Length: 498
Image 1: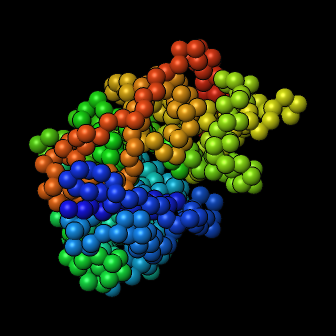
Image 2: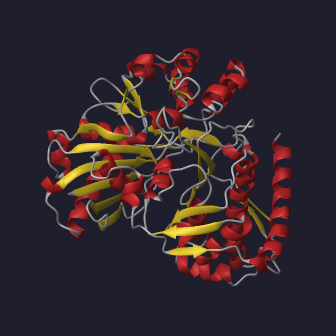
Image 3: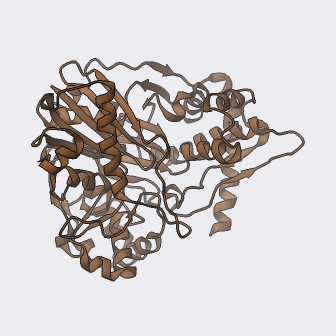
């Protein structure tokens, strides 16, 4: 049996073809060649056309078939991973009513903050483990307030992965984990937070039908099968947001385990069995993929919006694409720890949850035109990303979680040995790297949902780490000092913003 997995990101769509019995990845692709466009017609806005996700999924299937020709009859399950917190609105005919408001869009921050104060922080934190913040529920309220005609025409709201599943199955559905990422879930009552919808004035009927994270979520329609070149009736058997799925892809399933990523955004995701929250709502708690009412599992998520996107900006916009990422890494490694006093705050991709939804913008500090060159800036960018993640990790540790080891895919910034070494040292964690990604994880998730694997744990038997990175003792003292200076700059910026 074969399994197909798709990871629908805001930059690229990845696809993976996995042989179920061996767990071997037969083919992996990334489309399109150039990153997907994000429209920002107003400051703080970020929108995408959902149709481009569906077109790219079709391209991914074709590219997989080109890499490893396969019989569509052999595909026993499809899994979907997707960019979280977005909002897609469809009418009764399934037509998209407006561009998707995606994860890094900041327009709904005031909406969520107003609801947080009106409902009361204690009630929100006890039941939602979050402020309504800038999540999907607040974005939906923004549409109600600012685009009432579109709201009146809406039949269902969907998360980005729900939309892709809808194009496959013709049924608008979502998952409990999806509800939690949109701040539609009451953790205390273990049911949808209809009281929040009532406060926001959102019609309950707009919520899609619930399906299990692992299990039969629908089947390919004839139309979808023809578009994808697959068999009608092929089941969709797994769906999860990219960060819960990334943790699953790394076998992070139990309390005390943690995953990290450094793609467009940077994430630390720690699993716990207790519904914890940060009183300042700087990190988020979601329902993990293997959560059940009987055995509860939650993901504590710290997100830094400006991670790989900062390094991409340096390469494309500042350097004009003249250096490869490998050459950039080599130049950064030529500069000593601390980048000779250059500091970068990487907060240039919308409002940052870890900064209580403030949008500071990115900034460079300590630059001396007589002493510093681009290598210093490249190193300072890597360090600034790690420092920001360390700042958030302090919040997670302050909630009572001990994070001593993290697992990551050998991809994106973790392709840089220098970045991995900085990360392990500054965060005082061992980093285990794996040759996997979200698409391969989604394919294995489809295998769990299709009953090929007896459990989520069984899907990762025989998948060892390919590298282990330990903190560098010789770097610990200078990095402690560099981080201290970086944190002082951030503190001043936050005080100015207040």
